[in-house]
Length: 408
Image (cartoon, rainbow, N blue to C red; front, side, top):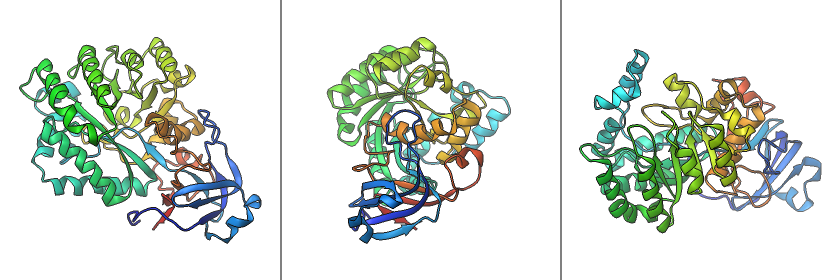
């Protein structure tokens, strides 16, 4: 599959769709399936969708892409990744399987700090090359938009360099990229939390504000406190960055309640979230980003996605692609894990991997098939979306359409 060279300008009619997932009602879990469907696109945008026998006459003169009865759905929106990094931590993966805890690995100089060292050491071109390779594989597996966090730099220069690399990944691969500043990932080695927070607020945020849409903070044991996060988010809001949180992953800290307080776009992980937290998140419109690849990779159990969904919280799914705790690149596996280990239905999981991710990134044009939406689509080599969790481990992505371009 070749990189997207831009936005398609000529009209294209995608026909022969056996089952089309539209998400058009925008109701969580409501897939709006249309059988025997067609989709028309122009200038990278969907201009019409419906049954094939209702295609407007004016659109029937378009170039035709016949998918021969296959299922089509919106492109996956992976709303939580640490995609830009150098090196790997396969040795730590083995150590965890032999009984070492995440905190023990971190205390021994591994964990995030080992990736920070590798990322700082890598040349900019090498960092882009490694990260673009991952993004290219994601695109081939149906992810048309990916959120990428910084957070492996921990200095002003290196955090900015990571965000610049994220922009290059978008240019080099054609995948859609949404950038998040995660300078408050962990304090840099040798720095007290308060001193590092001052660095984030006084120097990092002003330097990166034009390079990111969101500001994330890892609130947890061994990372940052609620009070530190609140200070960072106050400064980020002044610069136009929208809060997101790593919340309640290793223990319950009150981070989900903070997400509601600051009206964050999302709270992510949520392994130790409570029903009271869920009520506050639902009332504040905070999206819960579930990361089943992390629980799976760390053998740590899964976050209570079923409870959050039933409490009225909008749920998204994402890979958490990172070198230490979830080196997962494909959303189809995440969908399967959400069904098999988090008790979501196939319809709920597919919605969360498409429209839910778009909602967490505040992108109304993504994860949906209707006039005016981005022409980002996935053609499955299967008759139904249900085959994604039903056949885990099988590459079911036949073709990806990105910005109206059929990628080969």
